Length: 129
Image (cartoon, rainbow, N blue to C red; front, side, top):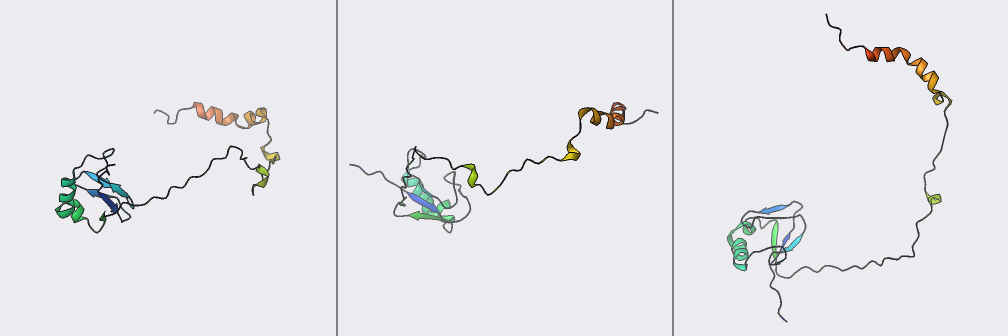
């Protein structure tokens, strides 16, 4: 079984770091395998040159070349189809349907109160002289 080569780098800063000679931006607090053929097309010579005198070297206070690939925890959360949605009775909020008398007005009363403003709406904003 052949083992794939890897060239891991980690961004240890809280900012995205741009590597100009590789035309790549490494997001904050992430590790990247630059020899992963699914995502990148770099050669080992390009990466070694960048690590010795290129942008990886210049930004060595942000980017670290890893000797060992990072271990990611595989957490499998089971999905239970028999789970239920909790009832709304457990909510800390209560919905009140309150009626206010001052808001209870018929359409006819509302139209009579606002009849004078309807005439003002029809007039132009500025009168021509």
